Length: 220
Image (cartoon, rainbow, N blue to C red; front, side, top):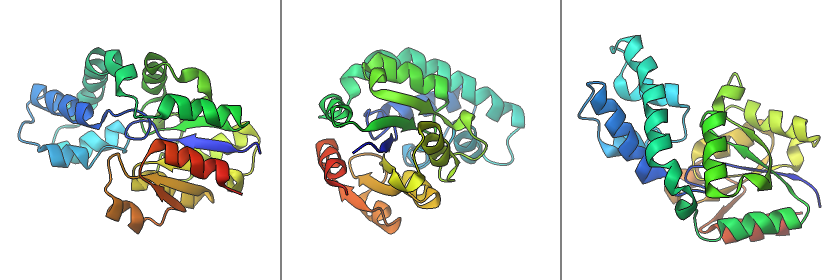
C-alpha cells in the first residue's frame, strides 16, 4: 500500500504554537515593534517566516527590519524551543509515525519553516528517522498554500500526486493539497479552529493524531 504521506510540522506533530507566539513577540519587541497581539501572531503561523514578519510589521516598516527579524527569530527558536522538542510531541505522534512506516508508507515533511530549522526540530524530537525527505519554504519558489511543495515531494518520491495524502492543522496545508491534486487530513488540535478548517474542505477531519493514522491506513 505504498503511498506518500506528507505531514506538516508545527501544530501537527509538535505542540509548538504557543512557544512560537512567545518567540515572535520577543523578536518583534527586540526590533522596536511592540504591541502586536498574540492573536495577530498566531494568525501568521503556517506562513513562511519572511511573509509572516512582513505582515506583522507592516508595509511601512523598513525592509531591513523585516530582514533582521528572521535570523533573530531563528536564533531564539533554536535556544528556547528546540531543547524542549521531544516533550512537545503531540500524544500518539511517535507511535503513529512508526505505525505508518511499518505499513509501508513513505513519509515526508511539508513545512513552511526553513528546511534546516525543520531538520533540527525533527532531530531534537527524536523522529527524523521516520522521514524520507524534509521540504521547507526555502526549498521551493512558491511555498504552501501553492502546490509546489507537494508536487516536489511526490515527484522526488516517485509517486503520482493523487496517491499522496497531506496531514496538517491549517488551511495552508489543506489548500496546498487541493492545489496539488492530493487528498488531505485536517487535524483540529493545532492552529486553525475546526470551522476554519472545514471551510477549506479537507477530505477528512480528525481530532487526534492517532485518528489521523487510522484514517490514512483505512484510505483506499
